[in-house]
Amino acid sequence: GRIINMKYGMIGFYFNEDFGYILNPYTKMRGSALNLTMKKVYVKEKGISDDEMGIAIKKTIQESCDALPIERSELDGYNFWEASGIKGYATFSKKFRKNFEIWI
Image 1 (tube, rainbow, N blue to C red):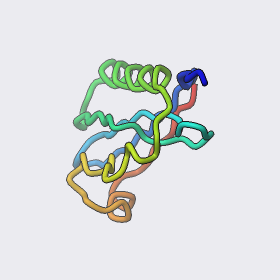
Image 2 (image 1 turned 90 degrees about the vertical axis):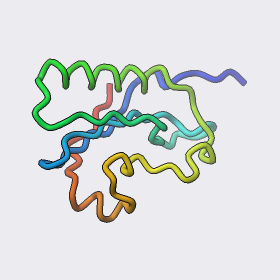
Image 3 (image 1 turned 90 degrees about the horizontal axis):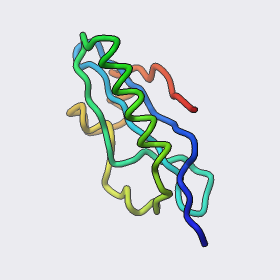
Image 4 (image 1 turned 30 degrees about the vertical axis):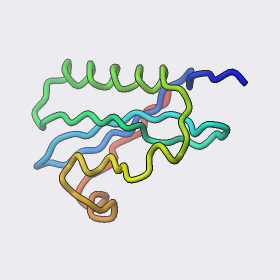
């Protein structure tokens, strides 16, 4: 079968006052409608300008739009939140606010 990209973009956007921002693009799981985070994370320091943040958001969305579906196994052992230095998602979710998800 033909593999197509997402045709739309979805990103996660997280913030912590001391750390800054984490942006991560999503793609689809091959053969499913399930959204998966990609193995790309963008870390932006707090105090970033609005223009720089806009560029980072656009880049992350574009990567999601261009992404091909992946197998779930491609993410084994990968956790986007480890970019923050935090090992567990429960701790990460207490320290970082998920400000929004963007779908276009």
